[in-house]
Amino acid sequence: MKLTILGSGTPEAYARRASSGYLLEVGGDTILFDCGGGVFDNLLRSGRRPSDITHLFFSHLHSDHMMDYARLVHAAWDEGAAPLQVFGPSPITQITQGNFGPRGVLSHDLRARTELLPSQEVWKARGGSLPRPWPSPVVTEVEPGFSLEGNGWSLRSCEVPHAQPALDCMGFAVVSRGRKFVYSGDAGLCDALSELATGADLLLHWCYRLDGEAAHELMRPLTPTPAEIARMARAAGVRRLLLTHFRVHMDSDEHHAAAMSLMRAEFGDECGIAEDLQSVDI
Image (cartoon, rainbow, N blue to C red; front, side, top):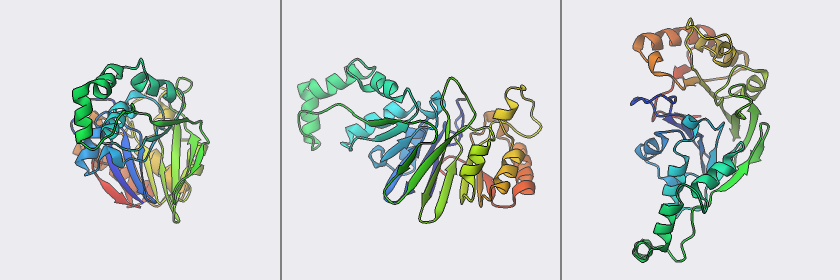
């Protein structure tokens, strides 16, 4: 397995970090976890094409985890790719129809591209055939606890505390050839995630707040700090830990050094802070 960080940031506009997006190459498939703003551009910068993505899993439907969804689907369609396999909580079907359905926000664009004779000729010159169908991602709505057997890999999920009851929120584990990758989504610490992460070769965990940083009492259990995450990861037998989803105010050298010091004290040396376009062999 190989993980490439396509977005390690938040909803904040920030040149250093795109919003959430994580590419996992495993078993002949290319899986994208979340597709926030800026992820599409980093996909291209990483040397991949939209049509390379075979599966897209949404941990939840906050905008910073799905803002580039329509762009990815449209661009892959324009390359002539097979329909993307999309998995996510409700209402991802409604959102998909809202983009690509007959009355969707892209319907005028799609009619022009598929019905106008000049556009048809352009499509044919690129090797396409007529009639040209509209984008049609294959969408499966899932609930926490969903599992899937892929081509040389398996996936399972759990519920994590984040934005309930407004949104279903999940973490994911992928296992292939004895190796295990776990992505927390945006998770407060919980027994379900600890169990999912047990024995993981790599745990990618969000971090919204630094140790010692003030937080509202309702936010504290939902936003674990570097030391708290590291303590959980060590107890779960995780072999390597990466923190992601860093906010702008957390990104100074001083804050990084402090976070790394606390993580190493709790977890050991196999830990770090994710950066956009970083790749990790698992």
